[in-house]
Amino acid sequence: MWIKNSALLLLLVILFSSCDKKRVFDHYKSVGTTWHKDSIVTFNLPELDSTKRYDLFVNLRANNDYQYNNLFLIVALELPNGFTKVDTLEYQMADPQGTLLGEGFSDIKESKLFYKENVRFRSKYKVHIKQAVRENGKVPGVKALDGITEVGFRIEKKE
Image (cartoon, rainbow, N blue to C red; front, side, top):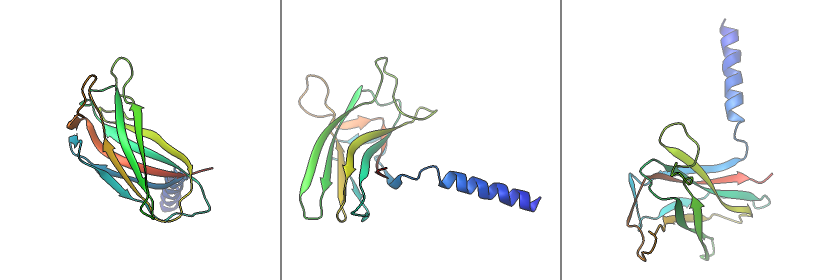
């Protein structure tokens, strides 16, 4: 019986550890119940193999308090030499009926949003992410964005 249980446990460990072979970096940071427009989420990336290429993703966890169809983000990739590449990105967060998109069975949905592909890292980098949502017809941004609870960043090996 002990051998049978040990073999089953070993099989489960191997199965779960091999499910995400592409993942190199995958971290989340909480923004609480409201993501303030001046709150910048920063990730210090590990030093990666400079001979390989990687795909980059912004991950979000959102709940039903998110009231917009789309999401605007400003993502800055800070290079080791001090130069920063800044992108303004737009992602669809809900379908036309207003149902939140993403993976998950509860009211919390996880979205894996494509950021960059085929990137080569030469040293340690930083990523800074802030929300830039605006309501239609209004210039000032939404000061307190409800519904986004966590912001993440993911790096996957390019196959």
